[in-house]
Amino acid sequence: MQLNIEIKRYNPDEDDEPHWESYEVPAEPLDSALSLLLHVKWHIDGTLSLRKSCAHGICGSDAMQINGENKLACSVLVQDLADGDGDTITFAPLPSAPVIKDLIIDQSRFFEKYRDVKPWLITDGPEPEREYEQSPEEHAMIEDATKCIMCGACTHACPSTWADPDYLGPAAMLKAYRYTFDSRDDGVEERLDVVDSPDGLWKCYTIFNCNESCPKDIDITRWLSALKRKAATSQASTTA
Amino acid sequence: MAVDTEERPTATASKTDATAQQERRFQRYRIRTGMFAWMMHRLTGVGLVVYLIIHIWGLTALTDPETFNALIAKYHSPIYKVGEFALLVAVAYHAMNGLRIVLIDFLGWSPKQKKLFWTLGAVTAVIILVGGWPSLYALGEWAFGPGSMPTLFL
Image 1 (cartoon, each protein chain N blue to C red):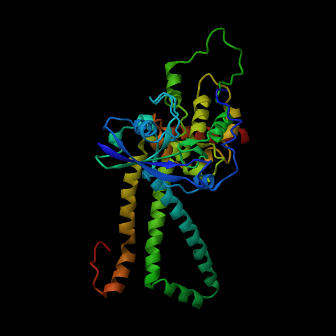
Image 2: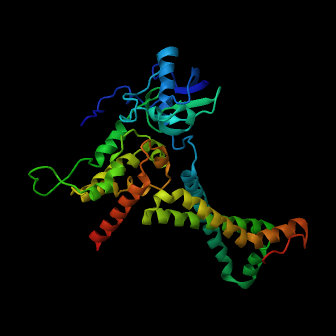
Image 3: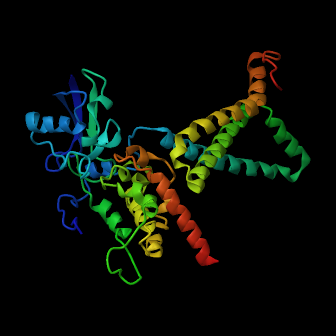
């Protein structure tokens, strides 16, 4: 089928503001959305800029707003975006992030927030002689959250992020959950100090845009709720 | 760290119109159940705060019986019936969605959020229809003449 591809283009050296451009692209129902962009880049307009690396939903480079919601371009199929000949698919950079060029956003802020939640194992006991052990039951607590590939689709889908650029956002706080609820980790308080703040957990209004946009189908809201309960109960115990 | 984002001249260039447009508070985004529920929650929440202010201001009429009776008499006019109905819609929705959020946040019912939305939406509709019938009845009588409204359960 022949599709109409609309891409929000922006070149900081030439354009005052972003504008939409249309391209006619041949496609098969089982093509990925990414392949449409690559067709444009390789056969129509080589100046189109986008991030992609593995193209198999692992590296998380090509998150963008497709048909009005955030998706991973390599992990969504044409058949789920268009019904047939002449249909339009739109591509825009992730909402609310600064754009470097075309579909490429500046991820600095996103990764700063990631570092803010201390996304590493914090331990205070003596080091074990061999590895830190964890039972399958203990791992089950964090399994869903470990699937995160840091693509940024969720954080940039969140109206709280749009309204407050300093809001930690779902991706960073999911990492906070992933380590806080890790049976080997002792950094609960350090991490709660960061997420239990006006720019943290309490700006999550259970809007579910994060869940809807996650290419790994992580139930992010569920884990943020668990983190909220943890923060609420541990605060109660320290003030009591 | 694997990612070094300290030096990015192009990204940290002075804020152009383009970045201002990109970083705005309101974004065009597909509205699904969760975001719809939240937007309505905000809207009804702000509406209820405005209502509360007007409502409490109305209590200033409590100083003497005559002004109070005159104020109460106004409440029978059609415009107040519309307001009464709107108030019920806002309260019913805000309460039921509030319950939904409590169940999600306190009991971890996130996986059931869509079912919750539709179920509590149906409950809200019933509350609005049953509870709002007297207001609708009064409005109908005013608009189409006495006796024009069917007497249902009330």
